[in-house]
Length: 386
Figure 1: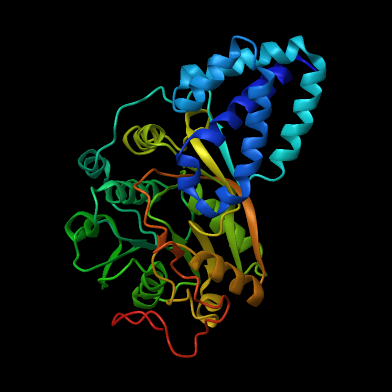
Figure 2: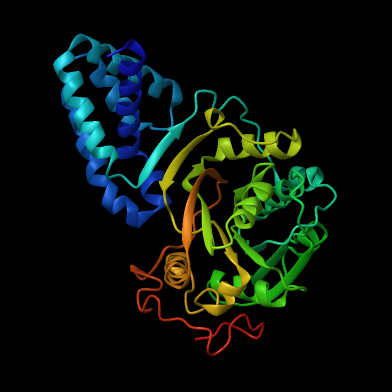
């Protein structure tokens, strides 16, 4: 094994210590933590045994207590690399252990070599200044922000990135649907979107209804619909690349353009916004970010032909609060047409985590998956159906 490969294994083992100990890991996707957690702990436990009687033991203990300490992570990776070089048998054992665990974990970790070089914040006011003349694009973005403005900041960055697009040869519009008890962000958002829609709803956020309302109440009859989460930062070729996919393959009914969603930490989110929006760069290189990585999640960015969206009745409006609606709509689209994935990186900006359960139970556990149809209507601005 070359020195470079041994170093990669050392860094990977340090990553498993991070995954086993950082509280952001279960917070980003609690259900996938339940599946992945035992594998993190198995590898991290083996690392602790490896270093038990040497100087690296203190590094493991300190990093477990402070998994956000980047210099400490680097020092631990170097120490583990040295041990693997010293003990070839242990190296072979850890290669097999990591390979087996890597096949099972659903929340991974990415820490780019240049991540953290720009620690300056990107505030809501700053992003509002950077956001400049509109690009005529039509994508449905469901939105609510009742706490602190982090999601509103992300939305402005999302809108600015969508305006800063390579020529794509198609008429595309952006519709932002603010669903809340009042239009809190109308004055901020409306000048930056092609169409702003307020959908009054006092209860838990209902993404499904907000999306359906946006689709049904946006002027025109688009052939394609893109449902995009507020917190996705698109690169400059986002529209051209995905529109080309639909144009090149008429049999393609729907797709998710990514397999890995990079959930950026707070510092990397600010740096990414500055690079993409303030500095006007076309993309954000992965070696400049630090993130958790979700493998093949169902939502965040969905492209679908409008005819199929209407055939299945859009999203199931019975889903409220966090979780389940994206799994359901993707499953129904796959059942009704041809749905696939591509392998673009998808950058998700940091924001406060939503409430994930109600009295300890998932919000939508009572809903029978795949049972929604278009028969009784959907997207009515008077309120969700069901």
